[in-house]
Length: 317
Image (cartoon, rainbow, N blue to C red; front, side, top):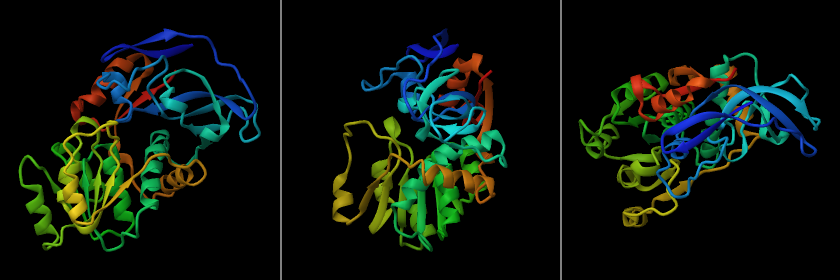
């Protein structure tokens, strides 16, 4: 079978590997059918950070497919499931995983929509730990795939103003489709002044930082938040962050939230249900699709945002 191997920065190839075997109870062998790339896969590809030393099989973790063997009692051979592999080791034609790392695929949405229950589940998990945002002014900094999902979710949860920030006009266009009431391009206008005007001087009750990594915008996010407001750092940070103006967070009594580790019992199934029942439309995120043999082109398209790429899908043979 084929597995992915990032053998140099921004260079990935497919190599042959041995077939997986069930190695204990409560296991399944999962065969991916459709997957999509995530911003948290990008560091493995670019190898920009010391903590990311890609191993064979990394990096892919948002996927649906079929159970081809099982030693557990939760699934049967032939069942279609959404699976989240450990440590992003999903770039393989088949792999062994705990059955607890999978949930059933609802047959109502398209396969591409169903895959997006994984990232949507991480957003729902983050929002579950926040206060009720009904009638709140919310700013989402960054309108990549995760920022767009936050835009759609806070719309569903009753936010008053839903203000989306990004420097990419095509992503701001997608923001409006996801329910943004206003969009701001920081390259074209002062975001602080724009948010102040849109909120009648009150600023944001909640700011979501959905950029993370090298381009993190924590200082900007804090500057958009009202005193005693809430700031969610969702974008995955580097382990050590320099240059953070923590004083503005401290002296304004801003509550800082982080979020990682959604739940397979509540969050991913709820996300699948939202999508299946049409409670949220995730189709504006679905932009590109490549076969597995073009994984290099798929990665390049995703990390370079080529041709308005938002979510880039990979089809397994």
